[in-house]
Image 1 (cartoon, rainbow, N blue to C red):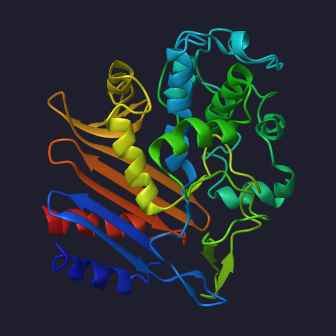
Image 2 (spheres, rainbow, N blue to C red):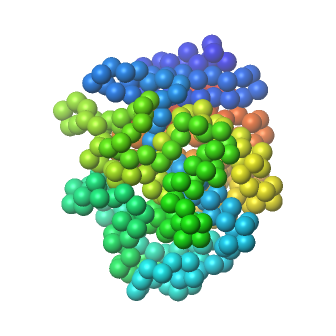
Image 3 (cartoon, one colour):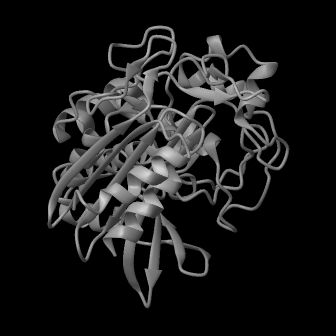
Length: 336
């Protein structure tokens, strides 16, 4: 497999990729690192470098909700009003946990991609350094009117996952990040992963880089909320994401029945792409071909795929805004 990865090296060099990929298949495990976690200090990315993965960690929120459902503290049919005491004057009273998990709730998003082209724009007028807890996000959307009808079309929604995180906090009694670290990261052996604050990052954490119009680079410290949230932003190593998926598929985080439900396609999106509680998946003739996780923030790019038939797993983490997809596709190409 290492010989095949020389073709990936060429792509990585051509696009100036910065990050780590981790590949696991029947031939073994290959991990490679490129670029720097800190460009000013010329600190190279390593196998144990921690990267932000943006929305790639929505699956952690989904699993936390499913764990609480298995514990009898929630159900997929529990409504938002039954879970939270906050006032949502314009939200439909019939919104359920299932609707929030599948992006079919119809609620407004605090980052509306129809209104803004880039997540970075949101924090131009809002003090990102105040965003340290999930409730800090509520003023951004709780007083807005519904965007669509409950249960209708899929509409990707970060606000829905903020609400799910608040539900986890209310039902479990834990701060959201603490719950994930105890009941998911520790169970999966993800020793290097966590929900960190950008002004208090631990060692071996990559800074995110954004290209400026003149071709120079700046860090993303003023482009994201200061604290990771339930809709995205956790920091992981590429290896930890592989450990996580192994723990999930081996039913060490949920029961086998709940794991199967989590991995099941639910909402048909386009052609052969579906969405379920565990994110995106490609489905052909009622068979799941691959599971797909992805995340993008300014200075963050993450891609993950898993093929159930062959157990091929590819994790790509980058501390630049682009590049992970190109590396993923080349790896898929050379391993076909």
